Image (cartoon, rainbow, N blue to C red; front, side, top):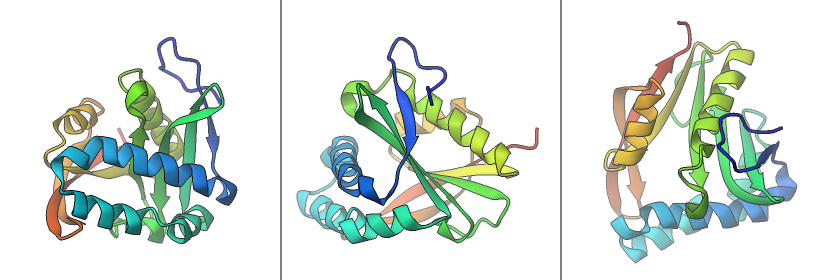
Length: 181
């Protein structure tokens, strides 16, 4: 599948299987560290990365029928990924009418090329196909570029929850977009 809305970068997307777990772990650690490493202690990052991106944990997430992962690839190399959750796979109990965008991770060299927008559009299309009435996500309260990006797409803050980074409790803002318009 070709991603829509991407400028001149030729990319494709594909749904992941458990066979992709090692590549998923690698890009997860790289992109998370790139995005949040400077704002967190090395110890908290190491603790979080070892837990969140543990191969058995990622394998279980990939095998969960209520979670979907998609790579965006350029020249057959993953440059980012999208993780979507429904039903009990959602990180918060949002009910059967909701689809969660849990992760949009893009490698730094490929940011600002429309890939995040293409992923949001893909998530919205999949939510419509699955007859969902809302799409939601969590974003770190200090991630200003991401908050502005989601607001541009019509997401509005409705709540917040605690995200624990190692020993540091942080606040994620919960944002929702109504799909019934």
